[in-house]
Length: 387
Image (cartoon, rainbow, N blue to C red; front, side, top):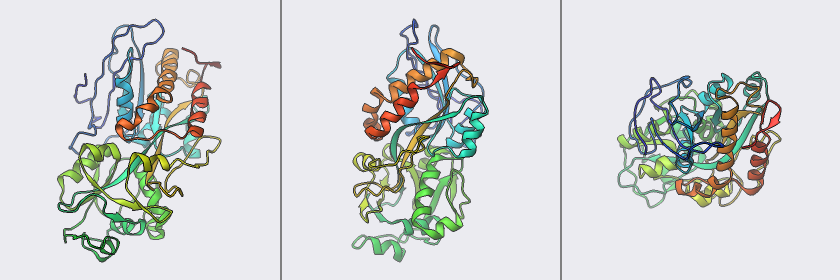
């Protein structure tokens, strides 16, 4: 059962209690949630790194804590509901806060959509063990709009999107949008920009695409988890942006596919590197992972894939841990280290098979094999972690 309640100042936190039986534990299972989930229409306030509190797990069960990506939260909730015997407290506070949380040893694992920067890797390694980023799955970042009378599939290219989010295009019947959509009747409704207000991996993915295809956007706004938006209204988390788009006629924002589907949003077909306008679907998201180069630290990026069938604004997401969780001082100690590996093993195994239920895509086989190797290489005090 999922219960909704407020947890301190973390209006955007998701606390997922689930049960993945640790050796000799009971088979009881509970699932709780405190968050603006994909079904929420509210715009929560800002929040910083997660608090050092956790719910009390059921008697006889293990517990682990995680924090970060709101993009990944629907999947971690889905994986949570499939488990029994392990409590996972996951706080959906954004990728930036997730990285901070693992650096600060507040949680057992962090979750981030953009790969770690060298400075992040160095900060995490100061815990006493190298940082490890493990790719988990792929998902589409949709361009969702609230424009009554205009069906899903409005065509937009990177330059036009850049001009919209720079505030240069102010109404939906602008000539630049009309040129891409002959035969479509566009209203003169003013455009309201909705962007993220927090440190966000979804923002990093969206701005990485725009910076790559639009030099003016790159020069004026740049790319990253937090950028100097020249216009618009901020929403906390994917849920906050989705709620604001839903409530505002003429609004446009960028949200992960699961949130767009939950709100029944109309979404744009975006021009990809091959010159094709592609809608965000499971197939086009999967295509984005084809032929991706995998660096030694597994910091993959699938934005603006050259694949002809790829949706161009697709993101990867990672679980972030120290290679030796115990030496790094993971909050839950040795048992939590074991349970983190069990959770990762599920996610990279059976969990891949259920991703499509939430319209996320599995990792390509070559990347998945490297992720599994990284998870199996995690240690506790120099020894491999086993169940």
